[in-house]
Amino acid sequence: MRILHTADWHLGKTLEGRSRLNEQAEFLDELQEIVEKEKIDVVLMAGDAFDTVNPPAAAEQLFYESIARLSDKGKRPVIVIAGNHDNPDRLSAASPLAHDQGIHLIGYPKTDVVTVHVPSINETMKLAALAYPSESRLEEVLANEHDELLMRDQYDERIRDLFQYMSSSFQKDTVNIAMSHIYVAGGSSTDSERPIEVGGAYTVRATSLPREAQYVALGHLHRPQNIKKALTKARYSGSPLAYSFSEAGYAKSVTIIDVKPNEEANVTEVLLTSGKPLVKWKATEGLSQVYRWLDEGKDINAWIDLEIYLTNNLSLEEIHRLRKWHDGFIHIRPVFIHKEDEKKEKRQENLPIDEVFKRFYKKQTGGAEPEDELVQLFLELISEDESVEGEAL
Image 1: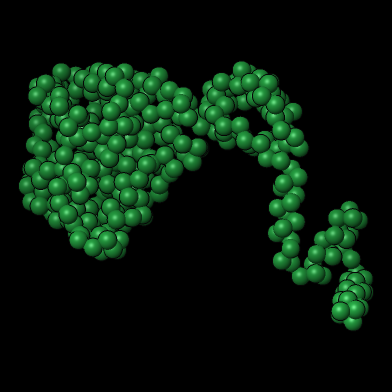
Image 2: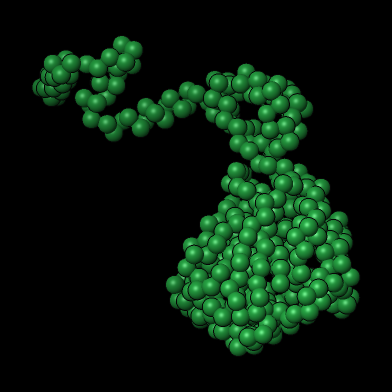
């Protein structure tokens, strides 16, 4: 069985007001090409299909059209769970229609294991699909005290118990997979993940993931990564696009799992090419350096965070000119050189007086080191000045 694992599409998400819908559509076209080229039997989407609980109509249309294409009229099962950004009721509302197309839309965390018949290979998957399990969606109060450590332990124990219960439905002659939208302790997060409770109460230990599952498909963290301390193979597939500049330089991908009943899963990563990269420019030489990069066509198809070193403010006219030249500028942040010098001076305030003198001498002489006798003479002069001031007082 060939399974494709993806997550965190965040359809409808913008970048400082800039629409990413065209890029998201480009990704979904690429995803369709991958499932056909790689002969994928099942698609798992591990939560955060949308960026908000009330997504724009265009984002919803893109979602439903795309999962319909992926399912190919039921020939390729598609299972989607709700993430913390999704409205569980809204996501699962189309289930009666979607189910006939081999599409499972799971809004709330439940203990029922999904039995998925895979027609392309005539095999069965048992899927422990745990949609985003917050206290409110579980309809449980896990701790009566507002103690973060206690809440974290109670939450971890509850998730472990849920997985253990669902794992009891696994069989030796089925492919057994778990999927959830949770934060596993030790995972590497980015700025674009509005928290489930990253680092807080809603944290699950890696060892609490079900060892009986042949693979655990995770959603929420946007950086593709394996969970090293898990007792089975577990992985975040990551988001398909970079959604904040903290993700600049990250390779985006989807994950393919090759697995047979009662055998170890083989996991591979397929890199994505769709969408604009997010890049950071640091123009230490000022505006002329920025225009030189623009002339060279640097990062012509990218979203740009620009940090530019200046002695004076940029005029509005200059800012408009930059944005007109390249419509990918998201942030244009001036760094004033004299302020940087002031910071350096403040950092030097706590240095020993002889070290301050050595740095001053080196700066004034173009790099020469003062002789020890000269440093000692300077310290004696300072000492004499302090003595005279003391006598005057």
